[in-house]
Length: 169
Image (tube, rainbow, N blue to C red; front, side, top):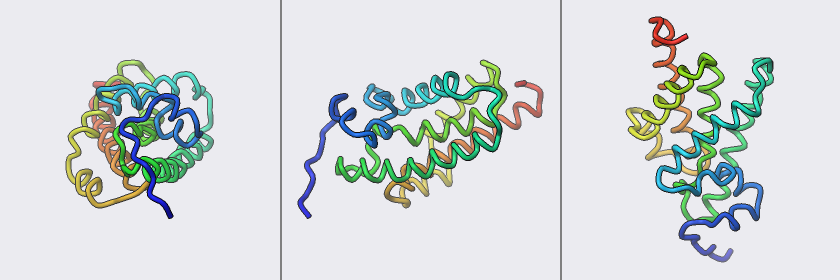
């Protein structure tokens, strides 16, 4: 098997040439620098507001999010290998899928969603234990996706506390 050429930083044209690349790079949001993860999370918020109707059943949303995670593992693994960089900074599907989970389980008000956004980004950037542990040890697509899933769990725990204390509704 021949060695793949490294792509220094993918272009929009390169990203759009394959559906897996387009998904992994968050429909192009991962190409925006600096802070591609933040741009990917903003894309997730926009897609959530547009694509997920408030009346969708919990079963349908839960199944879709499970699919988004599993598909994300495959897509990020594939595109990471193609780039020669398993967790390329521009791959933001991990932020998108994880933040959708946070939005699904958080109050639907703008202020609550803003708090969820800030909390998720904080935990994704800071990577408190055990996020940093798993980020360093899990490889491939599951490694790309799993640390963001843990950041989502931290954000959701904080959101639950804020809701319980009456700070958010």
